[in-house]
Image (cartoon, rainbow, N blue to C red; front, side, top):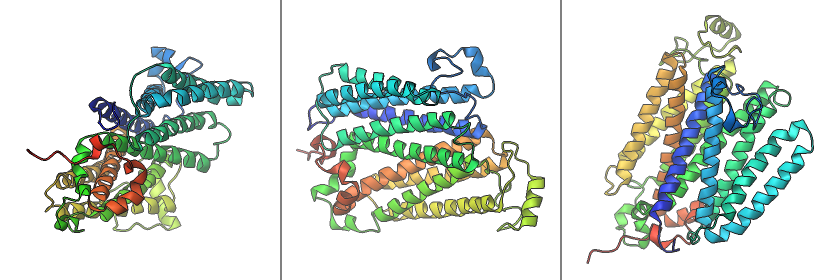
Length: 420
């Protein structure tokens, strides 16, 4: 791939990797919703087997299917990200990948010598190191992608390994180090939120490798009418703030899921029959006595009730903010208008899924759909933020996403050729 040209196949592969990661987020949500995160008690092996050789008969017991599928899917995503890093880095990435692969294999061998507590991390590093080494050895004649795309590829490369290691350590350390419920919950929340950030990074890479993004960023050529620079048409700051609010909302949701407090308030739109629930000790004791949720053994607390009310109020704030974005973008003559209406549709659907989650007594499939649509809403807001900051506020975009846009390949973000 020439530096000044975008490769449609590179873009398609980046989109495939992002979609696979979205599927992985859904798998993770399904595991948490079913409460089967520890269904396979060892890692990276599965009941002592190589994860790819686990007998099918074992998959049908005790939630193993969901947890083991999540592991296999995560492995596929890891391989895709290594391949994407190699593609973005071109031939220049071969030697670094080979060095990293050998270092990870040797480090894994060293960890195996430290005892059984380090066995999981040792096997993990040896496995991923072998994949990385192979990616460096395989010779493919392609040039380095332009701009900062290779650096973004390397960021995804390290993040996917960190995420995989965190997921595995959550299993390995569960019996002793993470036996404290609060510590285990914090570990799971961090793992989930990092997964959301990782998805946004891959979606951004897919955007930066597309020709479509060039149309969105064409205002940077200086040919855009002055009226399109008005905030009423380009609410870029509002989009960015709303996107950050969605990420905060996903953190709240992850906290609720990992605390198994998704039904701390079992009714909607009221809350324990009131606009604002009573959180006194007597009221909480009464709620626990009447509680219908069967997916959690721990009683709810007043703090969890307040957290769910915060979740509901934040959802309302997000809905109002996205509706305002769509309203302010209605006069826009470009695809931001359709983008914002799509975003609003996602948020409305997400709100409906949130209500359905409560009405269905937190059915696992509905709760998982709620997680997936939330991730899509975050990605949509993040891409809209990048596009509008680049298009309408070039100087601000340089500060906020300069790592992605400086030295941009001309084939990716150049203006469309004028009609002859």
